[in-house]
Amino acid sequence: MSFFEETEKLTIDLVNIPSVTNSEGERRVAEKILEYINGIEYFKKHKEFVWGVPIEGDKYGRMNVFALLKGKKGDYKNTIILHGHIDTVGVEDYGDLSSYAFDPVTLKEKLHKIALSKDVKKDLESGDWMFGRGANDMKSGVAAHLVTLKELSKLEDKLEGNILFMANPGEETQHTGMINSLDMLEKLKREHGLEYMVAINNDYTSPLYEGDTNRYIYTGTVGKLLPSFYIYGSETHVGQCFEGLDPNLIAAELIKEINYNTDLCDEYNNEYTVPPIALKLKDLKTEYNVQTPLVSYVYFNYMIHSIAIEKVMELLFGIAERCFKNVLEHLDEEYRSYCKKVNLEYKKLPWVPKVTTYTELYERVKNKLGDKLDEEIRQIIDNMLQEDADSREIALNVVNKVRELSEDKEPEIVFFFSPPYCPHSTIRATDEAENILLNEIKVSVNGFVRDENIPEFKILQFFPSLSDSSYLKIQDNRESIETLIKNMPDWGKAYSIPVDKIKNLSIPAVNFGIYGKDAHKWTERVYKPYSFEILPKLLIHVIKELL
Image 1: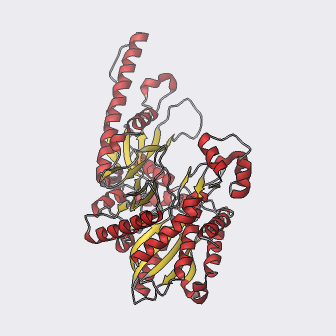
Image 2: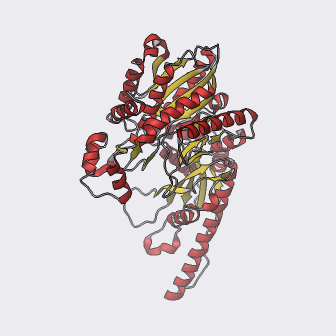
C-alpha cells in the first residue's frame, strides 16, 4: 500500500470515530491508534515501547498514546517527537448534514447535492479534497505521523537516535492531553536518557490569504492571553437613567478601542500576530427588570509573539483608563443636552474614572478581611468545580466576590487574566544551539523541495493558530509569568500549567502540518495529494537527515 493509500485509509478510519472534545470518543480514537501501532512489525517485537497513559480522574476515560522507536546505529540519545491531537470541535455548524460529518465518503455525496461557494464547489469536484469534521484539524496529520512512524521503524538499524510518537486529547479546549503528557516526557528523559531535539506537530496549515498557494512550515507557535475586564457601574431605574452608570456602555467602548486594533498586533522579526478580538461580552443580570445592570464583563483573545505580559497589561490598562474617561465625558455631554431639552438645571455627573488590577483589588480587600478573604475565594472555587463550571466563569466569580467584599460602591474597572495561558515560542537564530537546529531543518527541507520539485514553499516563525506546541517550551521570562499568575484569580486553584516542567523540558517545537482549508467550519477539508503523499515523504526525509 502506498503512502497515499495508507494515509487516506487511516484518516477515514480516524474521522469515522466522533471525538468531539470532552467525550468518550477521544478514548476510542486513542484505542484505534494503539491498534494501528501494535500492528507495526517493530512494535510487535517491542510491545514495551507502545502504551497508553490514562488521564487521572478524567470522567471520559481519555488517554495519551505513546510509542517509542529506538534507533540502533550507536548509543544515541537524540530524540524527535512526533505529536498531534485527536479531538475535534463539534458539528452543530453542519446543520442537516451533521449526521454525516464524521463520514467523509457519504458527506462527499451529500455535498454534491447542495449549493456551495465557488471555491468549495471547485475543490469538491476536483476529487483532491477530503471533507469531514477532523479531516483537516487534525486527524489526517495524526495519520501522516503514524505512516511516517511505520516507515521509519523499518530503518531502526540506520537511525542514530529515537522517535517518540505521541497522540493527545483535549487540544481544542485547554490542551488537557499535552499538559498531562509532560510527566511522561520527563520520565522517559530520565529513564531512557532521551535528549529531545525537536517536537514536530502536524496540525493543519492553510492559505494565509486569498489565492495563496504556498505550503508552510512553522518553527514555533503563537502564544495567547485572555485579558479580561470586570466593569462595576452604578445601577438605577431606567426612568432615571442619568442617575446611574451603565457598565455596558464602558464595555462597548472597550470593544471599540481593542477589537481589531492593529496597533496591538505583536511583531517579532517582521512576523505579526492578528489583532485582539472579543470572545465574550455579558452583564451579570440574571433576570428581566427595569433596573440597569450593575456589572458587565468582557474578555479578549490576545495573540503574542514576543511581547512581555506586563507590557500587555500596561497597554490595556491605559486603554481602559482612556475608555472610562471617554464614556464619562460622553455621558456628561448627553446629560447636559438632556437638561437643556427638558429645562432642568445641569450639574456635572459625579463619577470619576477608576481602573485597578486584580492584584491591587485583592490586596485592598485582604488588608481589610485577612484570611477570611481566602476562605471565601476557596469556597467559591470548590463549589464551582463541583458543578464542572467553565474556568473563565470561575475567575469572573472570584473577581465579583472580592469586589463585593470590598464594599466599595464607586464605579470601577478591574483588569485581570482569565485562563488559558498559551505560551509562545520559536526557534531563535540568536541562540547558538537553536540556530544550528534551525539551519539543519531549513537545509533538509530545501533539499527535499528541490529534489521533489515542489514550488512555493515557505518557512515561517510562528504557527498562527493555537496548538499543543505551546506547552513544550516557554519563552516568557519569570517576571512576565509572575505578573500573569498574580492577576489570574483562579491560578493554582481551578487552573494552572506546570511552568517549571515546561521550562525544564524546553523542547523546540515546529509544525509541518497537513494542508487544508476551513478548519472549524462545516466545509472543513484536507488536500490529499500533499497531505497523504508529499508530507509523509517530507517528514521521513527531514528525520533521516536529523538522525
